[in-house]
Image (tube, rainbow, N blue to C red; front, side):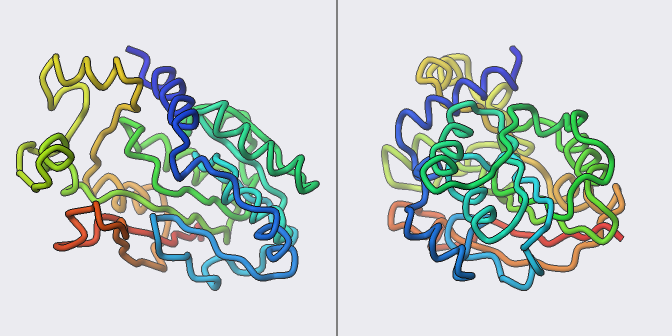
Length: 258
């Protein structure tokens, strides 16, 4: 199976379903961003601290696996020169919709986050990469490519799902409302579940997911040369999220290229 191609189609399906990450921001939010009043998220609920961004106006910004008509348009309205790079054509179409509606300039590029070869070295001042690398099986090339295309002194902002989230039985959580430990780590929709369950995911057109260790998420960035200068945790922030009673499920990092 070509995971990149499958997840590209699966995320197109997610847009069709109207999930929360594919609903474009309002024209009012864009107007406020033009006036300097804005916030965006790397994780489900907690806004990224504004000081993590520095001065946005005039910066070359790569929104990586961040389509959906949300973060890229806000950053463009705030004055950034934004490129939205996503594996889903439908997610990019949401960015295109907001750009046309609100007269924004956003460069749209479809592709794999592990292959940024179309961009030259030191192309960007800021990379914004919200929770999405759970749909990518191998993170090493992602961090390597991000380091290459980021300018010296540049910043990469990353959100990711904690690995322990994947130890639980997803079906038991949905059907029975209980958290039941089922999987060992690392988790993979291709290897950690049975054929019938995997077939159900594929038949329904949902994206395939993969857990990643903290060594891959954090150590992988450090190994490429990034310096971690910011950190916080976040929750799902909904009553349906049983895990919120026990632990935050997400991490956000500010990483800098010396």
